[in-house]
Image (cartoon, rainbow, N blue to C red; front, side):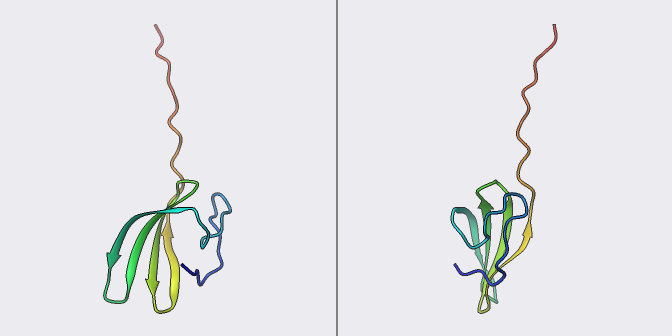
Length: 73
């Protein structure tokens, strides 16, 4: 996939057009495809793929690690 934005993930600095990213789902649209992907840091991204190339149109923050809690007795 070729990125048309030359951008990086604001959370981890990884280039948006580099691997690894995990494709979560693919959806065909009238103009091309929409890909939901997950960056190596865990950020969920919405990528639009059309005749212009690939653009990330939305992204989430990486998931917050679960904190272990100890029960007081």
